[in-house]
Length: 198
Figure (cartoon, rainbow, N blue to C red):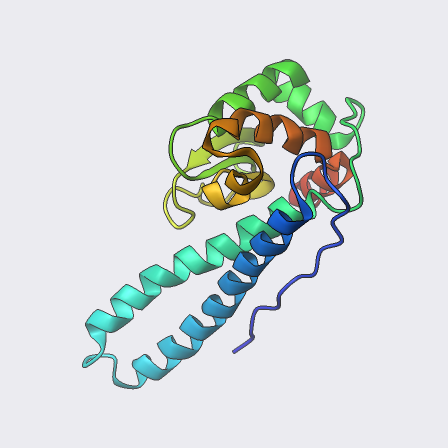
């Protein structure tokens, strides 16, 4: 059985999001990787007597989805902050796709930011659906519930409180969203999209 590896991210100084918040947030990501591996190991042990451990197997398999999706969502989130901010380009592949799917970058951005302001904890996500060949915005509360089946994750904005409260306080959610887009490396988002369509 292969183990999941923790990614290391080269994240520069960010506007609004402190180095301390990023350091603590990366520890949480490392926990997702660690627990995804621990659960895989435990599942193998419990399967030795699947009948006796049926209830435990059911519960731990549910937990695996939470840890795994938390790991992957954070990899997209942190990856998009690497290398310093790079501006959105309408001539990039993701730029052309956003304009084609949403009419304009401004229309897409307003929609995505509105989703990110959803009350409660969760994620604002941009997916590519290869079946319908389109981009889709979505909100999910907990990462193991509501991920769009068969879609590729292109952009992830973490709206769990640990990602912003230390720097912005609970009332600063809107400013955190604004700063996230100031810090975003659109070259990475473009790479995520081109990898998804190829």
